[in-house]
Length: 432
Image (cartoon, rainbow, N blue to C red):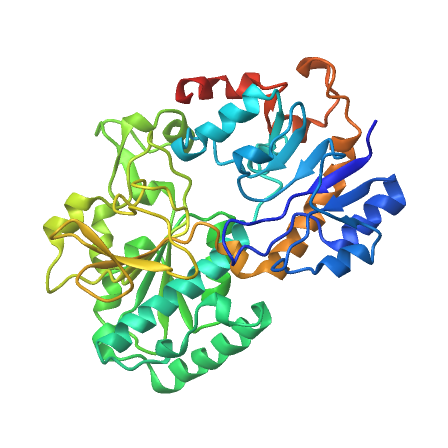
């Protein structure tokens, strides 16, 4: 049995500096389990090549000696080797077209694919995720773009001072700066022309928690969806309003004879329709943090925005952290990058334009937001991942899937076994 794991260099873009296993845990894996690590060199990774050499890892291009290879983002086609086990975020389980060729290549080479996103506990709760960090970075970048739009309209506010996440040193730097901005808001207030400033958050999971963690550095007043209209009666300008939307707020049964039931909604989404339109006109910012696929109603449609856009329109920006192309936010036409983080959707012409200038709604749609907090996110992820590594490395992948002694949590994340879709993922065959 080969007790050697490989770590692939991330190269999605120049901002992708994360690593699945940090030097501290690479050292622990060797000392406690005899597992050696070979890592590809990188000039941009948040942990230097030297830091891995210092814990007795090999730093080299060639990972051919590694039967098990860890990465974070999708892997290019020419990297895969016959019969090996790859663990990464594959972004395939919704049938994403842009990754079907990658999946087919892995099938042709009889590879094993374990997807972090699908490693869950007995209650179906995800165990490996970057969601909090996506929420943290996504909220900062969304507020930055809103501040830039205000400035472009000669509206001066404390929010103009916010920077993109990548221009802060780390999370502590963000926290310190936001506390100062919050003090400014408490002392001087926001312009009355933008008050009440209401931030809607769709979803309440890990991503949403990250979003709210950033907002809580500012003077925040939490309200319920039912209280939104009341804020306009006596709007406060020395705070921002935060409202979290759950499923019961965004959809209702199509039949007036039925009542909303969360379990039924997820089992039979076709029986429900969106009612989120009732809230959109009063929001300044919308953060999309929900899971979505094409079985579910959209949060915001092109038709609604086109039919309601005008002088009294308030929604300035959508932080689409979930980033499903033409998904819950129908006009999320593309993902963006830290280099070019936002575009403007013009509902009158049904066109998009990069940047935050121009008529329409800004969309922040960076698809790998955690890379903007590379050290904190890598430390957290490695802390959760490294206990699973010995279980994966020491498993016998030569037996049939049913008798493979992977832990139940990991086994739920196995999408391909010997190049074949496992039982839980047979539905993906239709996408191929």
